Length: 202
Image 1 (cartoon, rainbow, N blue to C red):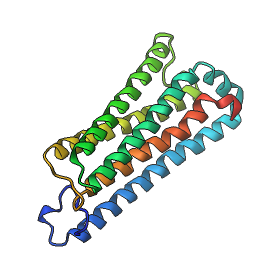
Image 2 (image 1 turned 135 degrees about the horizontal axis):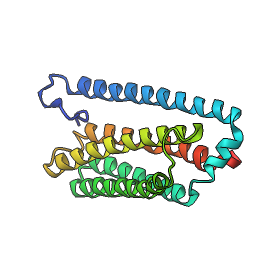
Image 3 (image 1 turned 180 degrees about the horizontal axis):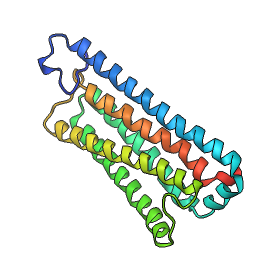
Image 4 (image 1 turned 30 degrees about the vertical axis):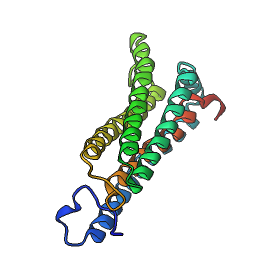
């Protein structure tokens, strides 16, 4: 069996090397994302230490039930994305498409829930810059939301390509790399949820 291909390996002389380079590039990108959010988490802990009461008060304006719902939604979406990768590796194209679309559905659900969180805050005059807590809240959740949107774009692209029969047991690299990115989106939220929503007990 030949090596799993990437989005672009059709014209490569060495598909194995192309796949390895593509996957290594994604791991390097993920490492930079970890450093980015790691810096934001460090800033969070510094400011929380200095303004603990402000952080507890700010956290009280968040609905932990919505945060919990979005955590569950993203965990399920990571499962469906993992199932999509498994389906691509097994050449189960219909299962691949179905799981990619389910992942998109859960991602859209996350966006809707986040909208129900943000809009009431705006209506009550709570914006980025209201105080240090909400500056960090909107910065981190907004940046995470941007990653969700980017992930949705690429998952949608994967679904379109899968519908054209692009992926199988010999060519699943694109789906695998897309899965790595989506799992990062999930992991970042797992850290954000307790820090922002459960700050009084963290």
